[in-house]
Image (cartoon, rainbow, N blue to C red; front, side, top):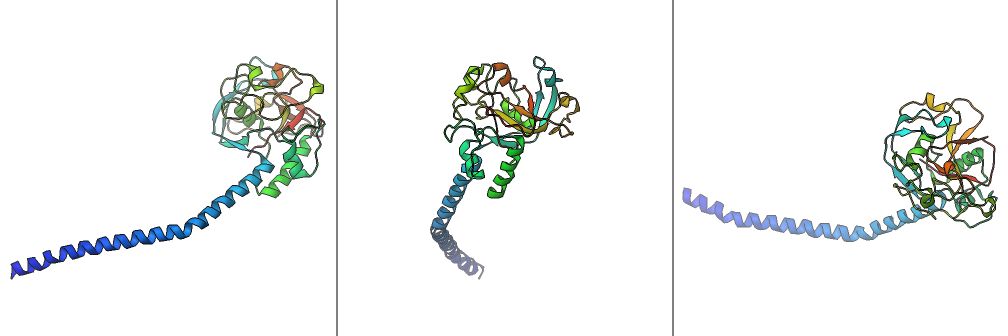
Length: 275
């Protein structure tokens, strides 16, 4: 009797294995069917995402992710407003790969304020700090984004390819990375005409000056917090960075600081986005 029961159980094993194989085959066929049905929809969704991204970039330009970290901000060899050299630690952020162009400004604002009437791939200029805030508000309305100007600390950190000890944006040689020392009448250059820095960002040294978010104070560094500093104490001037094509190499240093009234408009100053 025991032998008979064992034979019955053994005879059922192949049937059980066969059922499992059939179940697996059915599941695989069903998965292939679902994948085949979903593939056109997924492809349409992918194309739609890419289309929206292209449209957004027409307004915002390309952005570069900057990993957070700590660095020594300022310079002992520069002006007194670049001192003291102090450690600053930043969270990760994104910054524009290029300066905001005339085409971007036109697409958002419906006008072009630039002094130099050059192509759409040239940086927009003759915009005040106040103009930049209006541009960013409209840009965020159109894109649903949270774009802004970089803080002064973020700007310098990105200029230094993520906080490296380099005088210019990506190099010890200004000529390889920045337009400078040229005739004012010649005007600026199209974006991306020089070598990028270590993060793949262009024109942070030279081409046009760039507004940042901070108020200006020559002693602001004495009041910086260590983490994500931004100087917002009441003042009458705002910081701009980076130099321009008509300035000497010293103005193009990553640590260099300059300032203007928030309503000032010059043909040598533009902006770069962050978020």
